[in-house]
Length: 278
Image (cartoon, rainbow, N blue to C red; front, side):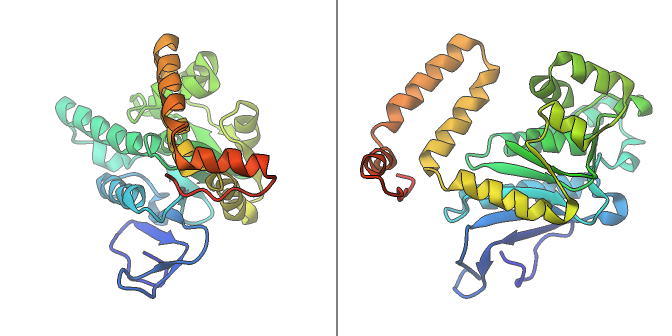
């Protein structure tokens, strides 16, 4: 779906670098990067049930579309990436309903983390609570200079429910994650960069161009290699022996691929490789 076609979503803008010309409504014209924009600026792009459902659908579309090489997730407007979940939906929850809500949210963010194509968060403003958790689930993160990250759930008598207690310490370490979650104090983009939460901090006006540039650098590599690398990186959360075994298995599989032969041939012949994902 391109910007020139009618969206099927209420709370997302889902755009692909394409033109609406063929029977599917588009043809590939550029780098085939899907841009998913959370579009609830009046609610600071908060994650409600509808957003989560539509985000899940957009991710599925991008996952199984063979022409899509990578995904960028960002927020609409100049203020917020995603400023948490929609707290108004929490007031009447029973314990069982709250557990179900957390499980559903975790499931959608697991879709992000387990995508076989690179997903990059372009954090354009406040990334708080569920918004921080969404950014953490992405494989790559770039922040604008005005981005702010935080897990303020304890201020509401809650704890993070969409993976923050698990992904944050894996990225910044247990000590910093404990500080951020227990104090609820947000951090700015420069501290996030120093902690390794984001790869770059850029001016707001350059955020999407920087995100596309980084993702193009990634997607120029062999698609099969990207998929297997992401699968192996996910296993880094397993015991070391299990992760090493998976890495060796994937390494063994990939040497039989056409992309491996093409990559080695191009290197020896001093030319640019042409990868096909086979």
